[in-house]
Image (cartoon, rainbow, N blue to C red):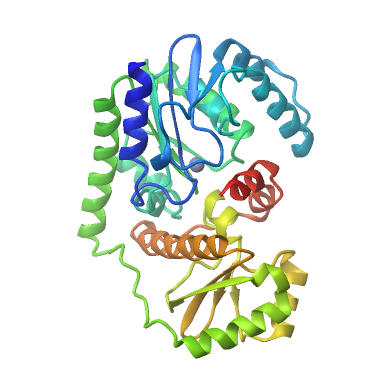
Length: 354
Ligand SMILES: [Zn+2]
């Protein structure tokens, strides 16, 4: 079908590292009856026309009327069940958790990504004010927990936008998260992205803010081997793999949901001893995925892939932190928001898929 071909092409066009990392971002297309959405735990760049999960929109609509429990775990379980019932039996996979949000926007194509350059705006203290000035046509969404809560907040905000301006927003900027661009044609989606990316590139250039994160020389292998020993003694299997980069100025707190999923909320930053690492685990409740030392930043994880992704997201977080200086400096997520992601079954499913 033509719309599936178009959304696959759009997924590839916006599935590059400029827009998303790892399994981040999601895309969809729709008719009045059916929503086709990216499966959870897949990458945009790897999608084919056959990979999309087809959902019955009439069944998804029951979600918006449901009386949901206020306790997050019970609410998520109910939502997950209703979403599963909406999936057409002939399509495999688990729909992206953002499927109901995609369904709630009436445009034919919806492309959601997390570009570092956009997050320099959405994760900044002055992001909302700057967005109002630079993108008056966009809808700014203050941070809410992703998934069902975000979907319901977007539905209300889109309705308010529509009654005020007579149409739906084509660009949604999500605080500490990323961007949604909608369009009825691929050209509309591309034009929406070009408008945002070009405007931000111009503003960063005017303010002499560059995206390139200054990074020191890679540490000697002998040093890395010694760190590996300490990490493994303190963290066991959680430090089965360690990858090293030269030192850069890493984010010191939770930047966005994806940063928490792949790199955890906080890096370990201290003298690397077994006692210090154990103190971190004791207080934070998890083994560190990112370790910041005097002359290196390490990605640490149970597998090589997990360690690499942790370092990749740490580098992205550093880039976001750097770019956010253009808009007043970085704004980290608060404890309640952070804890929701840390305990979210959906996200642990997604990171396991990779
Ligand atoms: Zn997202």
